[in-house]
Amino acid sequence: MKHARFTFRTSAFTSFCTLDRQEIEEPVKLLLEDYARFIDSTRDHVVDIVIKKNLWRDQDYRKWREQRHASQQGATKEAVSQKG
Image (cartoon, rainbow, N blue to C red; front, side, top):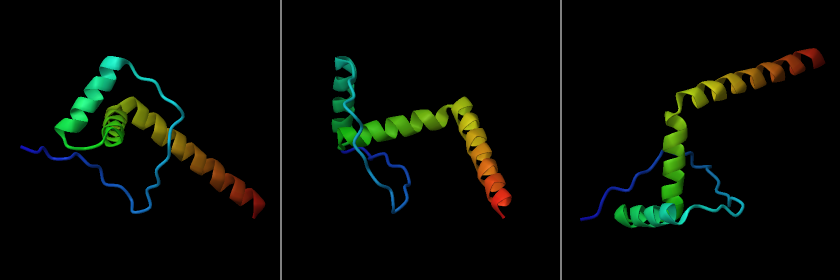
């Protein structure tokens, strides 16, 4: 029985990059490979979904990110208005 592959909606313009050499513990690597086989996917796909899922579940991070984004937008608008 094949299991559904978990996906996240992404823009058609999503680009991919390679992270610098990352090291993980051997038991985590084995879990990663096992789960990739379980959902009939790649290790890279599993890493992507796990990171996305965990980051977006962290409410403190989401609040911090929104505040940071809002303050950056405010700084940009202020700089534009000073030039005009």
